[in-house]
Image (cartoon, rainbow, N blue to C red):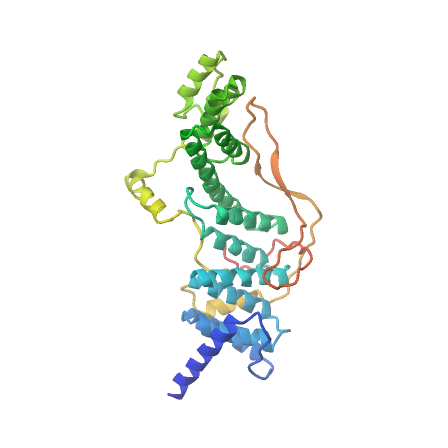
Amino acid sequence: MRRTTLVVILVALGITVAGCGRGKRVVLEEARPGRDRELLEQGMTEFEKGKYAVGRFLLQTLINTYPDSPFVPIAKLAIGDSFYLEGTSEALAQAEVEYLDFANFFPNHPLADDALLQVAHIKMRRIQPPDRDQKPTREAERRLLNVLQRYPNTDLKDTIERDLKAVREILSDHEMYVARQYMIRQRLKGAKGRLLTVVQKYPTYTKYDEALYRLGMVLFEEEEPEEAAKYFAWLVREYPTSEYRKSAAEMLEKIGKPIPESAASDIAQTDGETKKDKGLLGTLFTPLKTLFGVVDLNVPKEGVLVKRGETAEQLIVSATAYSKPSTVVTPTATTVTVGPASRTTPTGAAQGKQEITIGAQGETSGSSAKTPAPADKDKKKPEEKKKQ
């Protein structure tokens, strides 16, 4: 009975500490040698059981009582993971605060880039279908670019580029949705602006050929046949398998322009990329997903360090491995290429690259003090780090 009462008290205190962790410092016990490691192990054991509030109480005790412990950074990251695993809107908001604090307070930690990527994933989990508000989508894109900006040598680059492509696909769909509505209402100027955004900013868009065709039609309706012909020719040349190619060729004949030959080197790139077969079930369920605000994005549901299904021993091994000192390398100012501006220009010439400057000021969250731009991290990380 006494043990049950003690657990209830611990849970209550854990919730209180977790809810006001950004307030006054709370020390709940006297410090003694070795106790910080015990608290880490006990907290991870509670996380294995799914008792996140109790685990957070124990890890918060570690942070408050042993501020100089080598386990403090990993304890703070694990607290963020526990909120992320809970997955509610309130928990995800708190997870974002914890991850940003971790990355700003410990910018040279081997998992700082993972924490920033988790912030982007939190934004991605809030993304709505293309016909709705895209503020979370733009925030997700900004957060993904922020990881590359602060850690250009990150080993998560492939994951970030994949996520960027998925996020920009949603943004492109949104611009196309608005452009179609404008065209229906004969608001050609608005449609032109949206279509130019797609063509200039999102070269990996799977409906890029449709954007070229619609832009050409809008320009033709606005009595700009010379400009329209450039985009029709671009479509015919770069997308030989497009369903819009025949109509674009007919428009070129109508304008009195020659029909260019297809770029053979790009056929393999466009085949199967522009249109994807979703199958019968995909076709049936897509309208339902849109109705209920479901967006198909490959967003991980696990934490950086804390994973469902892992034993307490596995969690403790990972935590202690990342509590050892690591060597860091400070990068020089440079730029990072994040994708081409577009495959080609309307005339077929190569167009530049999208680049961002590294070494920018680190971001902060809540009431956290600003920190200087973090030093870049050595690519060599503990073997226990799991690829996301």
